Length: 246
Image (cartoon, rainbow, N blue to C red; front, side):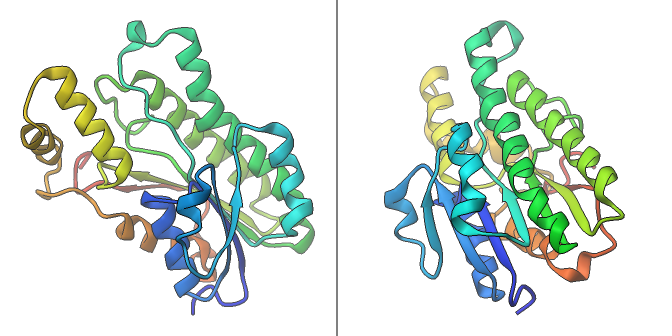
């Protein structure tokens, strides 16, 4: 019960990494507000308060603290993976990627930081990626650019509030087995005209550890960063990638 008595908001909580984090937080005793655009999948999550939320909706995000009250933990998990290099990323795609991966995170942090500062404590966990300032990944121009911004945002927030009880850390996953990944693999297989199994094997081959990561492994790290035991940890970029950037 490492999060007993704490209140947490997790975005993109309906599936994948976000769902695993929400479930892990519940198991550790937290009161969890699980937000996602997919209300149907949210309804399948037990022991949480579901919130149907479009993280790109400025007014909805701004109104959220008034609806659910103060929180101790904010996990920014919503994201979008655009495939392609800079020439394949038109301005609309770039703006869309920024709106979900960066601007939404900024708004959520800005909405809930005042409450954390008032209570003198809080933990913000931002889901970034190794495709960022950590490592350049082919055909991930917009994604890598936005996730690099997430790392910069994380460090700035951590530096600004290190003496006021609020910590902010980023998790940088490698390739994690999730519905989002499986969709991207299928799309890549179709676009390349290769077998789905071969496309999957190519993603696995990037991992020196020899397998894809599991959402539960990211969730375990999120629990640590959310809990009081990580009180000396802030402004960090936590790489969890099966040795890809080692």
